[in-house]
Length: 333
Image (cartoon, rainbow, N blue to C red; front, top):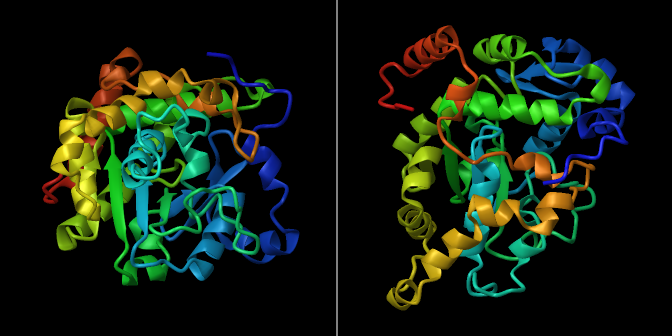
């Protein structure tokens, strides 16, 4: 896989300059902030941490996004299987229009982030991008890293459905650390794992704290199982076919007997597999609208990769935090 082209500034640096100065002075300056992982600062809003440009978009999303009852939203913390789940959701939701065995399938030429827009990142509420295949059609498929607490009011009040994917916090941390280092400017060097670990444990990470994000969706999924489907990355890895069928049933488009008999579920799992997606040319050399190379989204796609990086003390600390945060919730990661 080719390395990212660093001839231009990292995406978040370039976009940061587009945030209106008046808004910086009147809104951003009043928020708690801490040094970011690669960006200048992360800002705290409604208990979670955002880059300046992302926070600006979050406010616009909360104010302007109007959910439809037929919408499906894929939600997650960063680096918890988002790209994979978006691909699976797109492939199964639009399987009539785009059969998974079609050699012209959109996922073969477009990254799932181009096909499934982020509510708080990809949509210009003044000029919506017309190239999102799912944007104007119903059912509409979106994604989001927003915590449930910060979702637009229309999402909470409508009958739209959400699928949430979470990951073991140790793997989520390692994946986020690698991702950040791929996007840091060369002159910044590598972010030491000890520094990143301290920030992650204190909750100062992109749309962190990790545990508060996960717990928010978990608790809501218990209250509203028909609205929120809570999934675990590790379980989807172990039983992909089972969970693809579960997602389809949750949304109300279950696979017909003849579809299962003809191998449609298997074809969707194969199409969206890490090995297949990571080796597609679009994901090896393509970039998104911000200039971020798609190849930074694909690293190993494994579970328990944290064992190669974390010290016993780090493991113990993360396990203790997880136990304390999730105590009494019934959730185990």
